[in-house]
Image 1 (cartoon, rainbow, N blue to C red):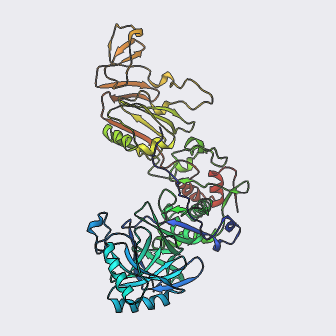
Image 2: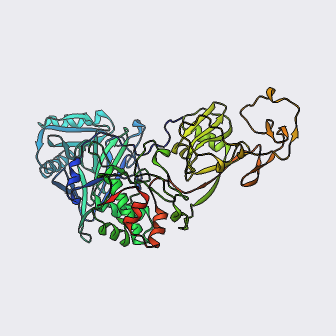
Image 3: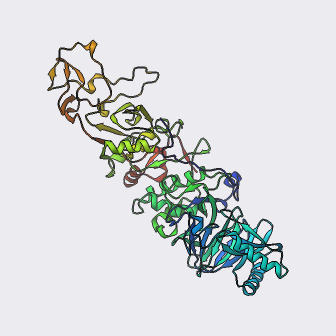
Length: 560
């Protein structure tokens, strides 16, 4: 059952940005990445900007004007002095404005000069308002329509053509340090913010106190959500990615391998008709901007500038993960597309790397799993057991069945481990309501019809009372093992003890037959596709070069 479980790599297609796919044939300096900045965003409805000098505003091509070095940008809506209000009736400031639509100015400076005159004359705040045709003058940010109409009437009495408008969720407003509006623009206008860092000799701006190279654009989505997008050159983007995806202290060849994987991954995902290309978290690549750059990883980016990974002349989807657990996985066993360069490889490098994630254990209470199922829009009151129905030839779970009062609920491939919040899909379950051991599951065989695990999974039940009830009359129901029956070498026996012992090829295992806990044991961290970062670390320590590392983990690729 697939519903709205964590959705990876989903991007809303809405706008066309500065460049098209033809940018790939240009120099690296012409390639920009649009990164959605989620952290350390403090509010959905507003964001603070701080410049190294004055903040400069741009359109698609040119500098427009400059403002003070500290601004707060807010969605045009209802606020107290500083914070958004969902209850309109409590608003001190709001989206009603008085505008003078007839006078259109070609520059901010002209419009601002007029706005200052009106502010002094009418004792109300006026400021430039950028619309598609140019700059007009807007006044006030009133929480009610009558206040904006009153100001419009005052202006009309003095010979101005003024009217009241409601800009709720339609505009973005810049406020200065004194919380006074200094500029407003329609949300779809191409406006970008930055400043100049003289020490770095580069455009840079702080977003909620974190510094980013490049420029910042804003957009409004989901009604009341201010989207913050960093427009940054590809190589400078990598400066902020590589040290946050791999430890900067690792060998330089592993850092270079990471730089190429990150560069290739980013460029593959740049599409013109979308608001942003990447997020700043694990949904894409972890990007933390200028403050987190490291000398070693910047060097790795610089020394591999422009190099990417190709398969038969096309950019690959350069997926990578932390720790493979001993084997990487075929792409179709985790997601759904079979890609020739994402093939499983034996990965002793990862096992030898000292990764703390090579093996792991975790425990969940039954109620935790029920809650996760219901958060994913299932209607479950009781969980009787979990059955791992299929595993891949590389030991990762292909299908997991949850036995519930609502019936059997199936989660396949990566969705199973995401629902459970496990480190990887290479896992087994030890619990009284699990009927066989994942370490002894069978590999998937093409066109196989009988998906029952081999009998060696549970060979014998050691200590149970016999029953004279014939097997034909036994009915098996979903539920705890306790109270049901098991076939053993000594006949059919009823399970009526809390703890049971099983013999398997791994020895004797004792489990709780009526446990409220599910104990998961597994290997690796991440989806297991493509390059293992800990494996790359080990290969670098053993003397392999970055291109050898990449060609080991990505089948049949070339570096250029």
